[in-house]
Length: 212
Image (cartoon, rainbow, N blue to C red):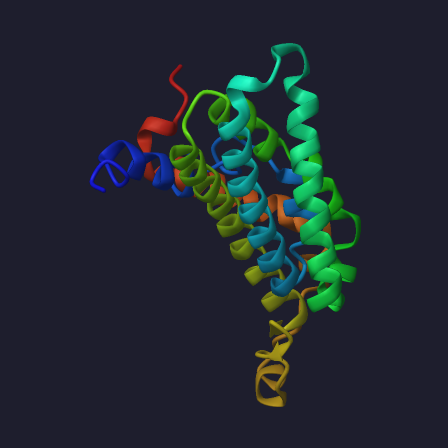
């Protein structure tokens, strides 16, 4: 049991959430960060979907990695991911249809998500199922964390709401001079917020700064 939660496994799980975040450090998954973060709810659902798919696909590929011919490994990875994405997409349509409509084609595009494919190729193909599961969950949560932070500010300052609940659209707040900033709902603002997160992380952790 102790080996399951060894220091190495803890590092595999926690590093992508903070120090080696796939979005702010590796700069992966930026496209969906721009597309699905105008509201908090779809950002949360997208983050959880990627986390689930990354974890399960990592485990599946890890289990069969020794039987996959090297020349078709990418095809096998895509088949596994496509099957999981289809299952998640159908579940969203069945139980969270409104959110699935907001996410539109971006759920299907998880198949080509750089984070997911990168973890399959770089980690699951070389490690055991448990380590691969931790790696998938960690990278998924790291991705989800960035999406949720970006969506929080975009929805709050752009629409004055959070998860659809009114936060800032009250007469007393508007009479004080506050106006919702429609620019926050445009994709470029997502990129600016992500850039601020990257700046903050690199300023806080000197080891992430590029040496001249």
